[in-house]
Every structure is written in C-alpha cells, then in structure tokens.
Amino acid sequence: MIIGIDLGTTNSLVSVFRDGQPRLVPNVIGHVLTPSVVSLADDGSMLTGLAARERLATHPQRTVSNFKRWMGSDHEVALGNRHFRAEELSAFILGALKADAEAWLQEPVTEAVITVPAYFNDVQRKATQTAGRLAGLNVERLLNEPTAAGLAYGLQERKDHSTFLVFDLGGGTFDVSVLGYFEGIVEVRASAGDTRLGGEDFVQTLLEQFLHETDISDTDRQMAFANKLFWRSVEQAKRDLSEKDSTEITLRIGDHDITHTIERGKYEEYCVPLLQRLRRPIERALMDARLRPEELDEVVLIGGATRMPMVRQLVTRLFGRLPLRTINPDETVARGAAIQAALKARDAALDEVVLTDVMPYSLGIVSSEEVNGQRYFDRFSPILERNTPVPVSRMKVFATLEDGQKTILLDIRQGESPTASENLQLGTLEVSVPPRKKGEAEVEVRFTYDANGLLEVEAHVPLTEKTVSSLIHRDSQVMDETSIAHALEKMKSLKIHPRDQQENAWLVQRAKRLYEDHLGHVREIIGHELTRFEVALDTQDERVVRDARADFKSFLDNIDRGFVL
Ligand code: AMP
Image 1 (cartoon, rainbow, N blue to C red):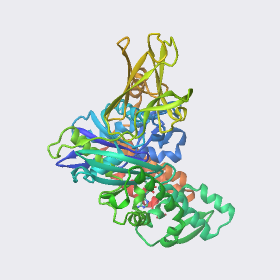
Image 2 (image 1 turned 135 degrees about the vertical axis):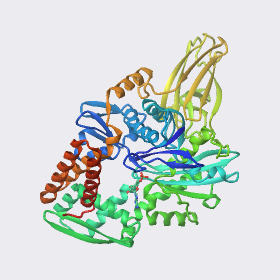
Image 3 (image 1 turned 180 degrees about the vertical axis):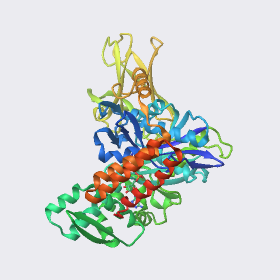
Image 4 (image 1 turned 30 degrees about the vertical axis):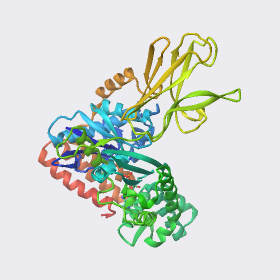
C-alpha cells in the first residue's frame, strides 16, 4: 500500500485510498491532524505531534516547530545538546505518520507520495525525499500541494481544458495556483503568493482591535502582547467569529479582567488591509496563466484560514461565483495525495490519468553574449523554460570562447533574471574539451527534469565522444550518501517515544503547559491532578490507566476552556 502524506508547516496528515475513496488515517490520539512539532523529551526520547506541541511553551530549548521553512538549507536546530537538520526533524513526523498508517492498515508501509509547495525548488524537493528515506519510506513521487487539491476535487475527471484556481490561505503563507487539465495531464500553469500573509495576521489584527477598542494603558498593552494565554484566547475568538456575529475576549491583568465584545462587522473592517493583500497574487497568477477570472472552471479553497466568511466573500466577489469548499480545507491536500498514491499503484477504482506538473522556474547556465563586437558576461541562458510540462529533456550547444581553451565550466542556475548572477546557483560541472580555435570545441548540454522536480545535467563533447553528467544539488545543502547514512545511524540511536504511550505523554505535557500558564489555586489543582494521573500510570494496569486518562482529559479540557474550578 502506498500512503499519501501532506507534510505541512503546522500540521501533517496521512491518508490511504480504500474502498474507492481517500481516507484520512487518525493518529493514536484519534486526530487526523498531527502537529509538525518535534521535542526531545527529558528521558532522551523523541516526542512528536500534540505531545511535542504542548512543550513548545514549557521546553522551548528542546522543542521545534515550523521547520519546513528550513527544508533544503543546511540550517541546524539544537534540541538539548543534539543538532538536527530539517530533513531529520521531518523524518520524525513522517515516521510517526507511517506508524499510524501501519497500525490502521495492519500491514507494513514502505512507500509514500509526499506533497510539497509548488514553489519548492529542486533542493527542497530532494530534501523532502531524503526525509522520507530517513523515515524508512521510499518516496518516488512528490506531488505539488495545489495539484493534490485539484485531484481531491476531481479535476482529473473533468472535460479537457478545465482550469482550476487553488486559493490556499494557511497559518503563515498565502499561495495561489492555476491548474490546467488537458489530455490526461494535470499541470500547474502558474503560481504566485505571499510568504508573509496568513491566518496569524488575522489574529494579530484582532488583538490590536481589542486593545484599541478597550483603550487600555501602554503598560497593560505590553503585558497583553506578552501573555500567551491571551494570544490563545484571541486565536479562539477569531475562530468563533467564523461562526458567530460576535464574541467576547477577556484579558486578565493582575487580578482584574477586561472583557470586551467584538462584533464581526467591525472586525472585518479592521481586516480590510489584509484582504487587499490577497488580491495581488491572484492577479499575478491569472496574468501568468493568461486567463481571465471568468475563464476558470472552478475556484478551490484550502488552508484553515479560508474558513473565515470574509475571505470566502472576497473570493466570491473577485471571481463572480461561489468557490468549492465541500472538503474540509485542512484535509484536501492529504486526500489528493492518497489519490495520487492510488494512481501510482493503479488502483482499479480510478481511471488512469497522467499527472504532470510544469517546471516552476527556468533552468539554464551562465554564458556570455556578443553584441556589436563586445562580449557581455553574466548572461543567463535558459535550457528549460518555466512552465514547460515535466518530465522534459532539452539540449543546447555551447562553444569555447578562447583559442586553446581546455575546459568549459557549466555554472548551472535557476531563476528568471537575464543577469545570471541574480539567479540561484544549483551547481557546477567542469567539462574537458580538446584545445582548438575559439568556437570550434563544442559541448552539448542536456538538461533532464523529472516528474519530481529533480534535474540531471549531461554534457557531451562530440570531438572526444566523452560525456559527463551530474544529478544537480547544491553540495553543501543536499545531504550526500555519507551524511544520509550517518543520519540513519543517528535516527536508530534515538529512542522514539513509544506510540502506545503518546496519548499519555500528550496529557502530561498539556498539564505541564497549563500549570505554567496558571497561578495560585488553579495551578495547585492542575499539579494535584497531574500527580494523580502519574500515580495511575505507575500502576501499569491498563484499566486503571484508561479510566484515569479519560478523567484527566476532561479535567484538562475544562481548564483549557477556561472553566476554572
Ligand atoms: P493551515 O496552515 O492550513 O492549517 O491553517 C491554519 C490557519 O487557519 C491558522 O491561522 C488558523 O487560525 C486558521 N483557522 C483554522 N480554523 C479557522 C476558523 N474556523 N476560522 C478562522 N481561521 C481558522
């Protein structure tokens, strides 16, 4: 069985294709969303998911979230006295999801389709595959997140020439992609976005609205900003306002409460500047895809923040139609990944559909150009142009610039600037040529870009019949075989927190977080209940633990809801 994985910045999901449809696999706590958070527990074992997320506040030095943004870089994160790359941290999450899928399916899982943002470059894609490998998963196929969303909404079952726009507003980023379906091929025709705009900005705006409308003192204001509990209640209020016309927010300063009612209408006025910022990327994506809004067949909403009515209204207004949002926006990408996994395994329930994407950027080499007898260096010479459907292979011929030149250095770059140095360097490849007069020794450079967005460069010298090739990666940033082997050893040496104890671990961490958040009487009760639960755990009697867990969970739920005893 091949599983589908949405490896998200905030949350990850795993899905399988069963009985003719994609199904989300619950984790051991029974949730389909597993927080993409990793924490090194005090006993040296690795915690993932909810239990780890609870430790973000209580053990910030040993806990990490949001590591997807470091994918494809050599940034290392210290947890305690150990260091981890984004691939390794992601591997812990992938390993947990793999274990959840295995428990659910009752069979071993060794292969996965993992989704990545459409804008991920080949280094980031390679890193995602490596993360899979470290988790014991073979990842032959990566899938662009918007393409996955298109699949979940059945784009591949539409008539030829259908186009979808995928509008993805997550916690911290905004992405717009235009997908096209043509002759059995789904492709990303254009993508644009804003990496600094997401649901969190709406929380910030609501918090500022509260402070403005309550007109509190500067000192209280600063205390409010630093108060984690308050942030959490504003986040909850934002979610409430997706369902209700008004909600209350309470800020506790010292021993007095400031309670204020927020009206949705007023909140939406405060959010106008944020809504304005959503327009630009949409316009850019449509322009790149050469489409007018009315030419789109469907507009699809994904990402938790599209639950806000004002966002849906904006989209409805901009496109003159209701967007598709029948699938839970958090789950759409994972469902699409399961469909792709089934396509790969050729599940009989699905008609065969070829899936391709387009190149998200141009790839080429640095060259020079002669204009009116003058030579201009630092020119970018694209070999594969942006938006070409993949897989693709193209060849271009380059020649020596000087008499007697013995080598040609191919400087491989990715980007859209005509000035080569402004584009991202992916690697270099040195090619030996026999010394000849300038322009006489040639090299045929072939770029092959596969469906996973990985580039292979091949250079053939006709004069010598010699060929050199290289799978391109930026050396320092892509893990080579030796460092992968090393990381695999390291993973083996680390204890993974036992899966069957994850729920208990989560409750303990959650209680510790709540203990830190509260003071006085409430804190005392939390401490007391935690001890009681730990005593129950020590009995190792399954029934005692199960009963104690149920009680402890509802106790913590009440505290989280603010029902102070
Ligand atoms: P994602 O990265 O797709 O999981 O999106 C998470 C973002 O969606 C966060 O900023 C959440 O606050 C936001 N979100 C989730 N549910 C809601 C809701 N009901 N109303 C408003 N925002 C929500």
